[in-house]
Amino acid sequence: MTSRTKAAAARAAAPAGSTKSAVKRINVALQGGGAHGAFSWGVLDRLLEDERIEIEAISGTSAGAMNAVVAAEGLVEGGRVRARAQLGEFWKAVADALAQSTAYSKPWAGFFPSWVDEMNPALAAFQAMATQASPYQFNPLDFNPLRDIVQSEVDFDRVHQCQSMKLFIAATNVNTGRVEVFSGNRISLDCVMASACLPTLYKAVEIDGVPYWDGGYVGNPVLKPFLTECQSQDLLIVQINPQHRTGTPHSSQEILDRLNEITFNASLVREIEQIQFVNWHLRAGTLKDAGYKEVFMHRIGGGANAESWSAASKMSATWEFLQILFEEGRAETEAWLAANFDAIGVSDTMAEESVLGRG
Image 1 (cartoon, one colour):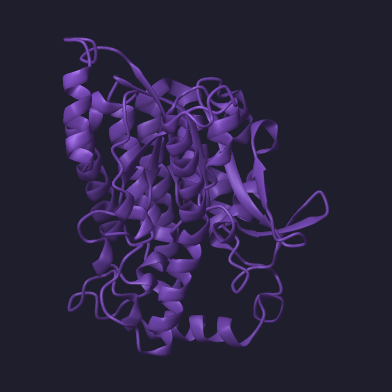
Image 2: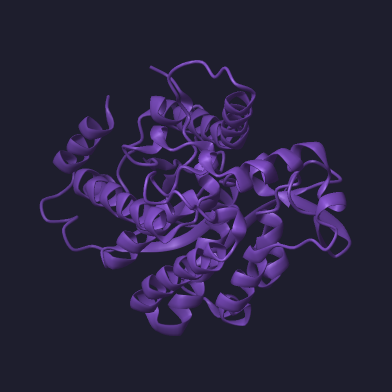
């Protein structure tokens, strides 16, 4: 049964008028993906605009973690309207700050799309250096402009005051190789930067003496907290790393880029399969009274153009590109709400092949 068929069945099964005005609670899982996180900004903007939707919790990794803490602070400062505005201000600050970097200068900007970073020799040279030397060698001062942006844009005391929405941020414990989930008052600037710490570019972020790398390796994003610490049965996954690409990569850069996409989707696919396994047994009655709850899975992907975005474009934070991603995120969410709102709290709407590569 397709997601649209399931949604139609859910509408038919629901009592007349029962889903038109009721507020529905969902949990939202935001993948990391550099500048592509602006797509998730668009998703959050549209969800926050719709007062029929209440976000119980957000799980975020890397750029997803940044979106999460910015939205939480905005909710505390001025509700949904302020949260939406603050997300926009954050991404504009990212674009403005990185535009000043020589690695993002484009003397040929008038001839090529501004997000085609493969044509930027400065960025290409930086990426080549990152594969040949450790950040402890070429970046001994651990310069990270993104840290300064997050520090200036996010008040973590306010994030801790957010009572209307829980946050879960994933990072990779370098010593154990396992995921570490930060929540509550443990969420900090270091926590967010740990979640976004690519080890080829930056030194490991130490928290309480423990080194952490990007959470995308083991939890992109992590889903388990939704099962143990939340009430809502509905889980909306915002997946911005393409699961499927046509063709075989041939160049070394193409191979590395595709390998990174597969790696950064692996933990998500594994957790989805585990949830679907439990759901199947619950529906079959073999896990009755075992303490598990059925989870209704939903998904918004990277948009119609996701496969056309190169992996290098994750490092392209031009305001023009970020706005394109934002608008695509809003449009995809608008379409998802129109097709699936009535199914929230009733049934799955996520087609397995969209995430798991089946079909």
